[in-house]
Image (cartoon, rainbow, N blue to C red; front, side, top):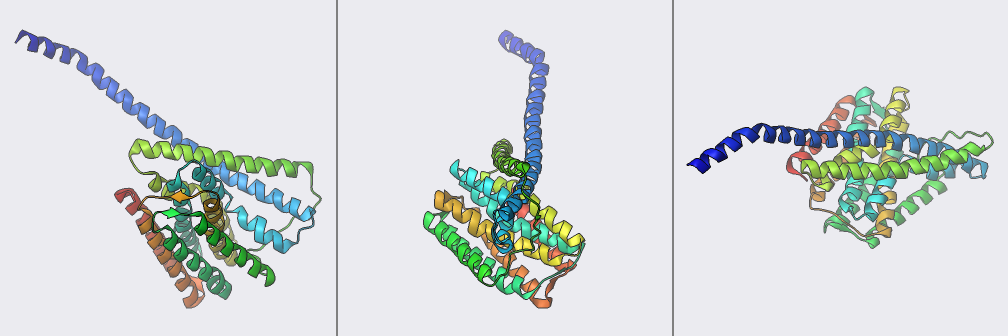
Length: 340
């Protein structure tokens, strides 16, 4: 009895200190999540600005080298909006984080079609043309179905990456022969200056650095809140790398350039899937968790739905934009709630 009494007295004495320690531990955890969340926001800004500087300076340098405007549009500008995805996907792939590498591309494409295309259509109905449906939409649907088949065994081999990247080359060759650029290109025809090279390498460095810290902070948050790297890759990382598309599409829609909004997003999804993921898989085999199955089925359905929306009345209405947003929100909720 005396021992029990002594233990009870010690428990009463130290209880406040134990409670204070628990509170401080919770604050520490919350502060770490807050700090890494701030890092992610900063990385999104750095990626967006870095890709802008990289593309702008690369276009000027390419024109100075005598490269035709059509080639610039098919390569430099087209790859420009996919630069953040490329940085994150390639970096995480070589770090052995296949879930983030693949999840970033799958999530970015869903985000582009759901939140960005849907949100842009909510601001103003978007007109579509036959090229957007029969050329870009059909090619994107083909790639999405192929990727679903390739990835169903939870891996993307070098062979699959080679097939995807080869299809992109064929697509670009077709556009070149038909003289159809992916999007409108505005080339600054002034003479190249020394700082254009500085901005080129600075932009490249910002993409690499931003991608690195975005991946690292995202993984830390995923571990601290108990969700998988796949979920963090297909949601938070995908949102971060889609910032350039969001800015370009909303600005274009507000200015009435409907074709740029629709074409930019479809083209970006094409380059994400065939170019970024294809090239990354060629360099290194990628493995993912089973959560990819449901997300790929959602992506196939969204691409098909967007093609139908564009084909019916050659535009995407505000109501159709709302439907795309709802699908995007439902997919986010499903990923966080079920962890896939």
